[in-house]
Length: 402
DNA sequence: CTTAAGTTTGCATTCCCGTT
DNA sequence: AACGGGAATGCAAACTTAAG
Image 1: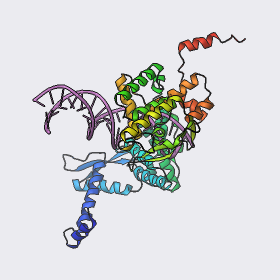
Image 2 (image 1 turned 120 degrees about the vertical axis):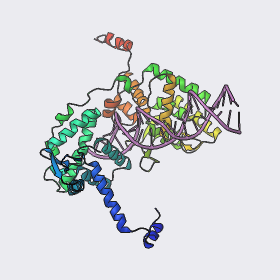
Image 3 (image 1 turned 90 degrees about the horizontal axis):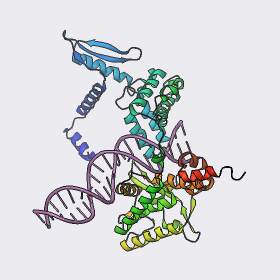
Image 4 (image 1 turned 90 degrees about the vertical axis):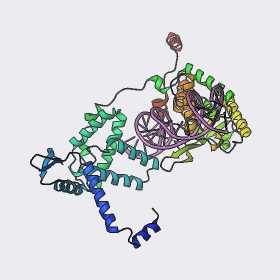
């Protein structure tokens, strides 16, 4: 509401501030009663009943003469907890994280994870001073089972809880951190242990062939649809999707015979704004300008000039530079069209690397081309794509040199 | 480990084209 | 010109994974 209108209404006595206070209190009361997990009922003798949470017994019965009295009891109980609940300390921890400078994207993730794991759950209203390592283990086991969490997910969730308790410990709300007594084994053993299949990570050669064919066909049919060229370029460079949309014409260094992969387009999900920043590792890298890449870039430039899309960014459409969603979606629809399972730009990245590695390129060179460390290259990007014939050849030659 | 980039999912919106 | 159905494309929240 407009501030002047509000002030005017108060001055004129149209709005009475004391009434507003009443409304706030009523709402707060209503809110407290709504989140109370136990029902409120009247017994035959006209008495009113409910339970209140209890850290030892779990819950304790309570009885009063009227509904109003029992509600007052509940409201008072929860008011007592104010400032001490897990929820309150989560908020304090989050505020601290903001002060320490976490990004908006991370903040948004914290919030969505809170809703997912804690909202309306038993943990959020618990008095943090009374939470024991058993309570935490119990919550962890419940969440692991409920959400079928993998080990990483479970560890991330535990990381949140530990962070909140650590903060509470530093602020002297609690004397020791119960998380220190939690045995991760107790919940990790319920984690989903399944590993991703090879086909989930890399695109097999026959599907690469089909996709490139579909892309070619669509380029002929709809040559001004720029994302098609970006997907094609991904197949030749293994670039990250943000790097593709962050690519500028000034990065195409014909003089050096290479592409300077320097920027990455990112999205601030809170502000809903795209921005250009450094690549994920913060480093620039050079990628050779091959004939295929030159061909793609020339076609892009030609189409953009023809349609009036041309600007400083390599991949631009009628509304200016395109965003990574367009490239990801473009690939998705080409897959559907080709009748193969959905693939992502990152699948292409893994495929490009695995092709290099299975044909004998060292991790030093592959990692340098893709812009990550050798360790990351081995851990996340190297999959066996060699055919059984190739393996046969290798095994046949095993002792030839001796 | 924590931080944040990337992917998935499920619509919403726009485009296209044959039909009224 | 308006309609309508299906395909293509765009978008955002929810979820997974990469990488320091």
